[in-house]
Length: 249
Image 1 (cartoon, rainbow, N blue to C red):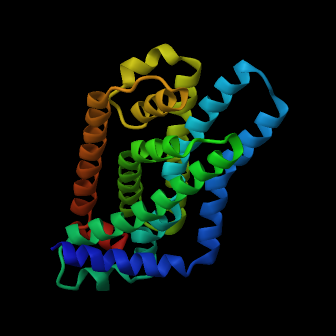
Image 2 (image 1 turned 90 degrees about the vertical axis):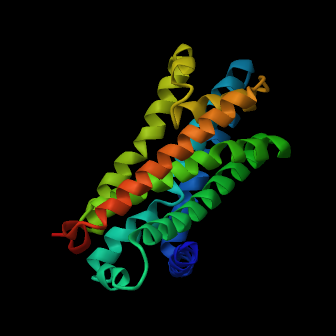
């Protein structure tokens, strides 16, 4: 039942709000993009510089969707397993699916907070209009849900926090590599329009440049991204039915 998932989510949120070091680390990562773009905007001027800044902003915004909930995801399953608290949790009368959904909701909440902090920093640095800030945030919400699902699957697969940290650190390069690739090869953007991460990159570029955005294409991209997140969550829930992923052996 959804109520069980919400109970799990509330516990995760409460526990991680107490982890000051993790919160500060996530905030630093979220603000790193605005700080870099702010320094570049001071050093470079002209029409070409504005296009470069927009491209940099879109890449850092994509990265923010992954880093905001990374620390929470790392501890969600891998940390519980390492502390030997995962099995007692699973012995409660709730479905493995509810455990996954609850932890996914908590990761998504922290990831959304990271995106809001990131975009708010850009709003201060480059004077983002408020309506554009809202539009980009809404465009990134499906990707946040997708990123949280990917990170939770990795945490479920990993045997301990160290292993989860290694894999999750590599995952952060995914939006960075795709974003930079589309910056240098913009003609490839239409080919990847329907794919998560690449599609959001193109959507952010259109929004920030004031270009027309197709509502149908945006909704289709959101549906594909959300459907991908659901499939990944189902895979994570399936792993929790296997003893080797419960005990970490």
